[in-house]
Structures are given as structure tokens and as C-alpha cells.
Image (cartoon, rainbow, N blue to C red; front, side, top):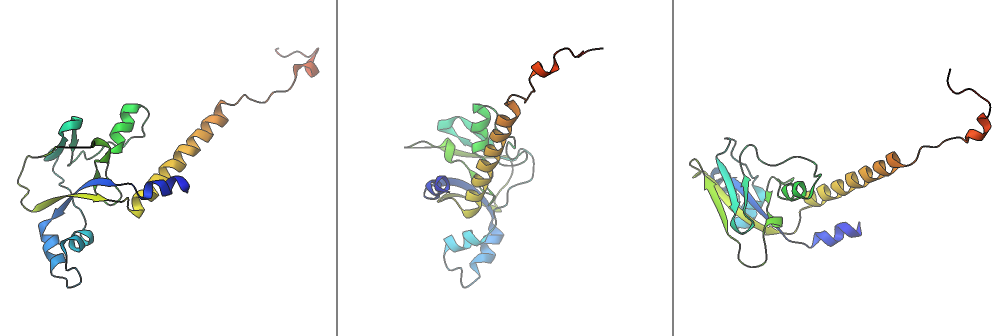
Length: 172
């Protein structure tokens, strides 16, 4: 739990895609009197047309598809896989780009291959959400279980001493 607490105060940089119509509906609600509240109550929705949208993080020389195929969904087995799994869709349907950013100036390019006037793209800076922290905790638990399995699997097999088998035929 201490390990998780150390991440609660970290900052995530995520990108969200919102339908303008959804944000307009949210603005009509009296209790949602700020843009921040309106965005927080709307659900991010990403384009479903293959190859229609991507994000380039110039200083990291990374290009991330933001329409199908959306993200790499594999268990990291190498350092390269680990990098690709870090900028993924969060449980809140935002794209986490934190691992691609560096201190100082960062340049992001959103590449559109169709009209997205019906969408608003918002860059969020926030502490990890409860759902992100739960996802991280689940990941650590699976990693720990996998490590435990490997330890048990690679342990020497128990065997009985062959001294008690003296004089017995082992093969026919």
C-alpha cells in the first residue's frame, strides 16, 4: 500500500477527446457552472475510423494512434514493450502520455485525416484517478503472482534418495 501512496501525488498528463454536443449538454446543467465541471462529467469518446487520428510527441519521436488500432495491449516482455505499454488508454478512457514528456518544452502534434469539428481535444494535468491507481495495483499484483509462479516453477523437484533403491531394477 505504501508503494501505491507514493504514486497518489504524482502528476499524469492525459489527452481526452470529447464530443462538442456532450459538452454543450453538460453546460446546460445548473450545477455544472464551470468548464472544468462540464468536462469532468462528460465521457471521453475516441474516433472509430481506422487511422483517422494520431498524436505525435515530437521530442520523444513517438507517434500514437488515437483511432483503431488504439493502443498496444500486450504484456511487456522487453524494455521496448514496457515503453509502449506506458502510454495507454486509462480506465477513464484518456490517453496517458506522461512517460513521453520531458522537463521543459514539449511539442505535440495532433494529426487529423478527417473532419473533427464535432470533437474537442483536451490535455489534462491531474493526479492519478482512483481507477488508474486500482489498475496500477492490479498490475503489481499480477506481476508479483507471475514472479511467485516462476520461482515455484524453477525450484528443484523433490526426489528420494537412490540409496534405498539399491539392487532394484529401474528399467526392464
